[in-house]
Length: 440
Ligand code: PHE
Image 1 (tube, helix red, strand yellow):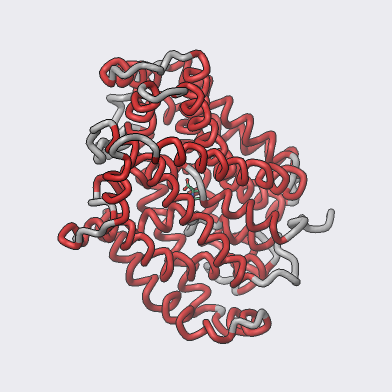
Image 2: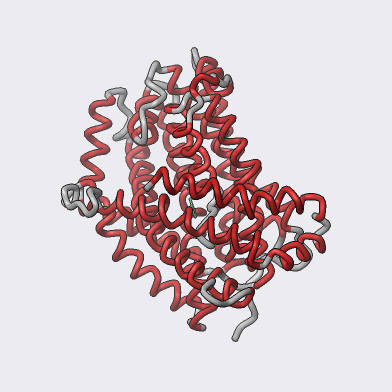
């Protein structure tokens, strides 16, 4: 047995974990969901969710991994046993499915980087852009090719291991991501009428609050913080004894939320400047944004940056989806890292094919009324992630609470114990059950 992998530094750990958090959720989903739900008021509800349930769940999951020094399944077994390891196995299945469709959208980002480089997407004609997008996602060869390309890039990083692969890449890509966002924000904010978008994004209109948007906000906060699927357990297990988890948790949640806010500031003002409906939906990134860039001076340059940053965001997240599966194979079956990574890659690629074909040849192939992509998204994001989050909250808040308590006291965090426990043991389980009931 080789000794267990560790992060090389606290900074590396924080960047890698926020790399997991900052992904398509922040850059692709957050702006259009905020746009659809009234802007400022959604931002406020979202921040409230992150500050309460979000942060607590991040800390709970990382503590589980940190105490056990193992990925989810083994951690649940070593800390408690009984039926708990099934919570870990569920999380492996969940991220396996998540990764398989995440790669498809990651592949679109690669394709759009290419299309921006060649200038093919530089047109103001949204009808042409929407035909281009729909034609591209419907093409079996193109979507499978780019999905595979994205998966290969992910595999290459995970093969390198925790320090040399994941940490080193995150240390470059995360700062680059934030710098690219700042550059685009600076450009966008100097457009005429951009301030209308900023005001829309920061002024809460309380008449827009409703239960459905609150549920959407908690769900997105959990997805965006990578909570509920064992990732933070695996990433927490690589943390050394010197690092204090509560402080790290604050940093990670802060960076993840900052990315959402920056993505909002990048997209919504541009949308307003060009008189586009802010609730344009998922097409905002791939259809609306190119149209906006094509109307700006030096637009092609900014389009290339935008898709590059989308790739950076997506890849640090997909790496975090692959790693816990690999860690599971290493921890549970003692398989060597390279071999475990390759085995997982083949399986993920196989499952990603139906997801990639869901907008073309398999568009009419429905199971439970959904195409394969939507079904996978639904099963992972709406059913399994909440289940995983619920189990982790109950585990930390009840099953092994005395140990969690002792560990947090040892990390000088006695002050947060009452609030933390109340959220893990009571609030989070109730809220997650509500989301679940709503989603099902
Ligand atoms: N947090 C990632 C994002 O926002 C998605 C993700 C979810 C990654 C769960 C890992 C685990 O895109």
